[in-house]
Image (cartoon, rainbow, N blue to C red; front, top):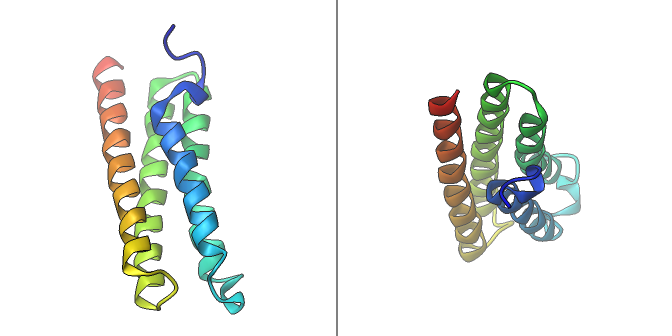
Length: 121
């Protein structure tokens, strides 16, 4: 059947899983971080599948690749912010490791998709 829309992409599905994980974990962050780190890490996580979807909806491959690049940057933000949360004691080492594993896997998927599109384009 193939890819009918962005929801069929495994990379988008993995991005959505990351969003869920970030929202669940960040619920336990201190309330005084609501407009700080909590907001930042959530917005960065949401940006990943959002940019995958937006890029997929674009008409030109170059635009798709551009949005995947933005998603990759947002993913790096999530990695950095989860490390900050771990260092501040908002995430346990185990929780931070789960996020790290998800982001590394997702990063590899994004690079693979970008490379495939660039070769095809």
